Length: 200
Image (tube, rainbow, N blue to C red):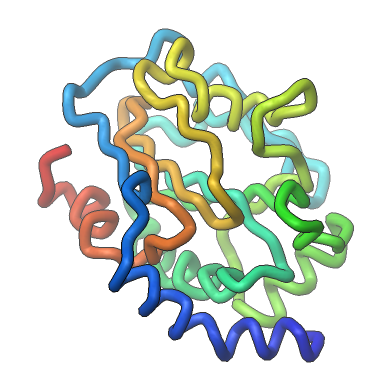
């Protein structure tokens, strides 16, 4: 880790405390009406950091948590929380990280160095896509196009507000909810939805 990354990791608990005390009004958005997608997410695929094509259809029957990530962000410590969530629920959950440089140039690394950074500093074992664009525009990743356009996913138009925004998809391909960067991956709402103990 660089000195900047060490300092960011150290300040993360204080950042999260501030956001817990003063939450953003768009920090959690749920598909309370259970609107089905107009286009199947299982028609999409990703290319992993090592160049392997992964079809999302291979994850039918499991929940998916899709997250835009960055290595030089105040929320980068969420990599560790995502890994904890993944290890605790890997029988029913797949976490996929999408490294992106869309916010303040906070992902300067290339694909090889992203993989090394995540493995060494956070023990990341969940899949990571190749570095991509997650915000809306001509170069937006097709998976994030699905996540951020209601005419595809059925209800959600929310693009990532910052690094480490989270989108939860259920076992049948329905987009369940959006959780902002200010919401920990271990937030009770997320863990309850993954365990099946919370209505949405």
